[in-house]
Length: 83
Image 1 (cartoon, rainbow, N blue to C red):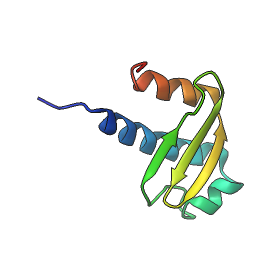
Image 2 (image 1 turned 90 degrees about the vertical axis):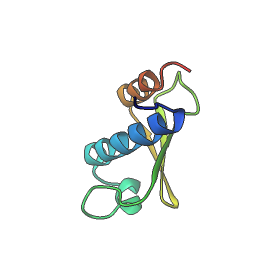
Image 3 (image 1 turned 135 degrees about the vertical axis):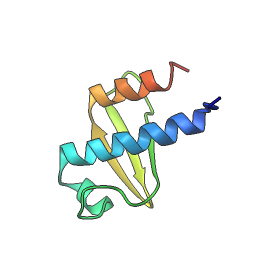
């Protein structure tokens, strides 16, 4: 049986979200925080400070990237199970 923990959900969702977000926004501060290949090669953490907003902060290694994407915020909150 697979054990699902809050950490597993956050890590898995953040990695998927970061790869998709970096591909979608393509430039600006995201390009400074990720390798030129378009995929993060460092640990990634997604932070949604206000679930009612469209702002998502990605911590990529030692850098922060702010993304405005309501659909992505909603998908992360749904993946987190509303906790």
